[in-house]
Image (cartoon, rainbow, N blue to C red; front, side, top):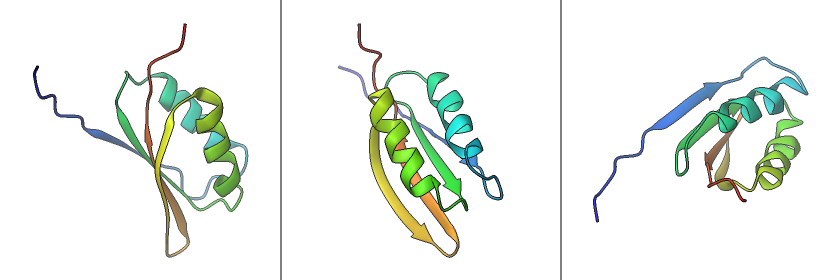
Length: 83
């Protein structure tokens, strides 16, 4: 068994309005391999609803969701595609 370092991609979506944060997050997630992490930063209030829904729909894992100043920050882990 080997230990693999997993880096986190950061996606800064500040200033974008619905539906762009969800669309850009989806595109980024679909380009990642299994186990990869992505941190999404958004100022769009609808992202609080849209991003968790997107993550659940894709079968990925919403690791954390937190608020900082006027931003909501999501940490998401990409899961293996289901057959």
